[in-house]
Image 1: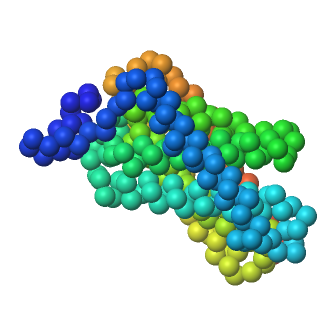
Image 2: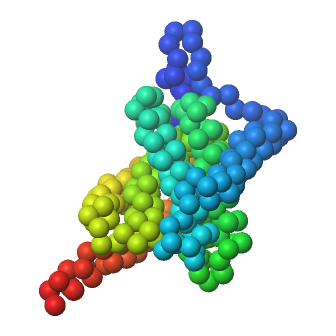
Image 3: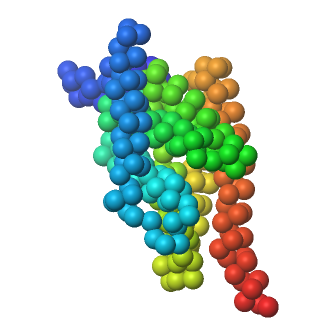
Length: 263
């Protein structure tokens, strides 16, 4: 689907609403600096201010860095997950053409997410040993490369917005961790959060990844070989990682509890 088709989809007669694609390298560099660089700075400032905004409880005093990190991640998930969902609801044309049709707001949201993952990558490197967080570092590296490609070429932004729907589940995943760190693992709130987390995990994470894989296969002819290879490798990495995480959540929150109750 070419850009001319996107022009017709977005606008009415005589109306052009396609996203302009900067051609000059200087313009792209400025866009990268403003959106992605600004996002990195904003998340760093938020992280620094969380000591006052959300002071760690006594049970989290020994791991104050992780407490701030999870709250920062929660803020990103709320922003990106809600933004991606609203994007498809308010502008359904983007769902019809995941390659070329997108609004400037969607492109900016993608840049903001790249900035978050860059911030979080650096935050983990500074506060944890690599062997403790290598899975997340690997995950963030793949996301930064794939999202960065879409951001720079101004294509596949709609496909990236589908990927950001995963963050809707991440909201409850982070809430679960916050409740654990606050020593509320045996409360009704934690139990309810665990249930919602598992349900949204299936809907917004596993199902979304499966749909994205199917879309890549069905639209193979519209994608260049290099882009298809990058996307396929990304999906091949993300899918097993998310299946393993799902099993860990199921085991820790439900299977272990049931086993203990049976005893």
